[in-house]
Length: 248
Ligand SMILES: [Zn+2]
Image 1 (cartoon, rainbow, N blue to C red):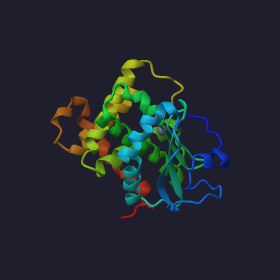
Image 2: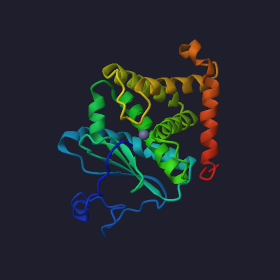
Image 3: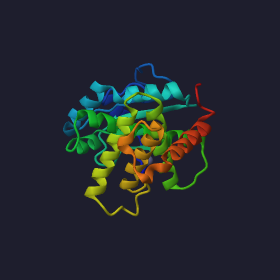
Image 4: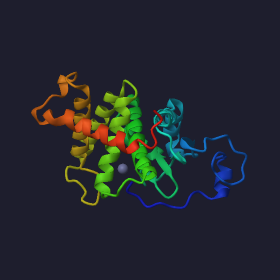
């Protein structure tokens, strides 16, 4: 969430793109849930066509939305809109309750990742943005941008580790991606509200190690001795905060 938001695409564009559901333009609409996370694809720029196909074929946004909807009941719809963002970056917009997932972000990451890794990065990113959406829906106290970013990373950890068996690997792949970003750009941008990339990488590894409770000796370091407690705190804080929305 580090970008300037623009108005939604005008109706004429929606008509041209046959957007259908949720466009609010009087078009014949596909049935879409009135609440919860839901997914829509916008037509991609020519340069991003392969990335759109990749996302659609793998159903990454759909399976993430299904996992989220099985866990929490949102009081309104949050739309995941896959689109060409021209470098503006994936993010959650609290004004429109939209998560914009950028084809062009994926194209950028493709250079250093294979398809399985890319899928993991999309899942981790979507869960992070869903964390922002839930902080918004729950109207949690504002503790500053950095605290919110850390909480969104924590939500991704909680969701990925409680859900599918590949969750640990998903977080470790994301951690390696943060390592790459840290190596490429070792001086953190002071204007970036996120934790430095190296810290985000370590946060994910610490969560996996803490969650695994002795199962992941490959991740053991003296510095991670406190990770079981850190993980428990992240899980318990989110479980408490999510209580009004939890399905079970
Ligand atoms: Zn964020």
